[in-house]
Amino acid sequence: MNIENKNLLPVITSENDIYPYLKKINQFPMLTDEEEKKLAIDWLKNGNTKAAQKLVTSHLRLVAKIAMGYRGYGLPLFDLISEGNLGLIQAIRKFDPDKGFRLATYAIWWIRASIQEYVLHSWSLVKIGTTAAQKKLFFNLRRLRNQLKKYEEGYLTNDQIKSISQDLGVTEDEVKQMEGRVFNQDFSLNTPLNDENDSEWIDQVEDDKIDVVTRVEERDELDKRKALYNQAVKKLEPRELEILTARRLDEEPKTLEDLSQKYSISRERVRQIENKAIKKLQEEIKLISETKLLPKN
Image (cartoon, rainbow, N blue to C red; front, side, top):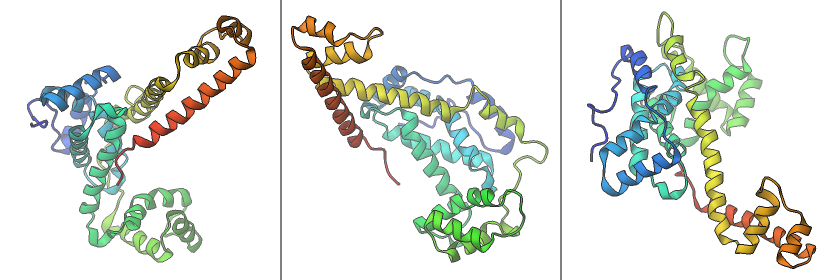
């Protein structure tokens, strides 16, 4: 099944396409939890490519937002976005809606992995290094260097090199070597994407309507907590759930005395049942959380 139907998905092939591309993807609506799950199931079980394409288009802004974070590596933004889109498609192919996570949470890992792999290859693995520590150094050196040298020019001082090496768990020599490779004049990471003004199309992704990563993460966190709670409460006995709800979740919580009279038990017994229900709920939520892991690099 081909998700990448160019007649149905917006295409970006050059720097000139960026502004109209960003305007176009802003028009695709974001999906509710229910809509997303329905489409994902339709794609997973029936191979419905139209459902998969809706999942793709609703997350293209997320890809663009993440790709913006890699602009400093001197690579064309349209290539970064294209690579991120491939990561998104890969995520959709592997996404299982029954795991309890939203697609965005799952896809972020795949999008970043795809973009990072492209950056590494573009910069030449010979110059960057291939170990996990060297890759971590490459992708974090610029950020840490800017933090330490906010108002200074030139190379890092020995103290700054030591600080970065300790922070990233690499040797001081590795920091020196990577700084020389990354910030050498022949390999400038500050190549502008637009000689005139790049703020127009960046603003298309970073305005208050399209702060996609923040909004998705906040919404997903709430959805995830609800899903965990709804699954965990199934472990409670009916009376435990009723007492917990009456004491902690109702708009007007009941007193121990109210529930004592309702169930014909002592107030202390009500308290014990409430505490037992809370403990069971916490343990079940922890157990569920530990069994639902995202893919690791």
